[in-house]
Amino acid sequence: MVELVVGDDDTAVALRSGDVPVLGTPRIIALAEEAAVRAIEASLLAAETSVGMKVQLDHLAPTAVGDTVRAEATVEKVNGRRITFTVSVNDDRGLVAVGRITRVVVDRERFIDKVR
Image (cartoon, rainbow, N blue to C red; front, side, top):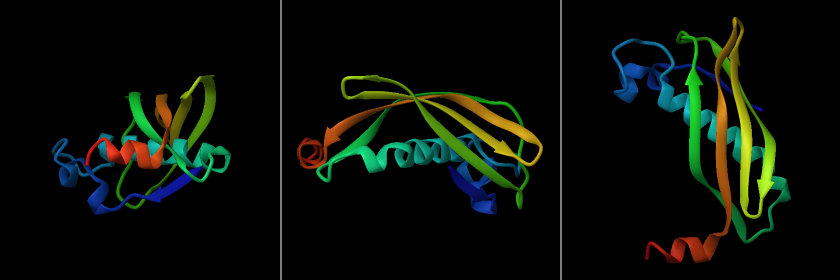
């Protein structure tokens, strides 16, 4: 689980994804990705990491600056190197966002070599 106290830099206005001063969808996606990374980090070898492949997210409710949100990710399915997570984000009022994230386990150095 990952927690965040929503600040001004986390808003749709700051992220340029809207014009309202509430938690922005891009920040929710990043929070859900962080929760997915943490959910499997202890299972990976030292040379491995996971990279994002697919995000499906429904942003259901606004969250105000100053409120705390919690993101959780649960492994739903493993298909070879692909791992699909069910993710949810909640605040004190309830469900803020829900969805699925797929990440792929890769060798860190070989992956970085692709962009050199």
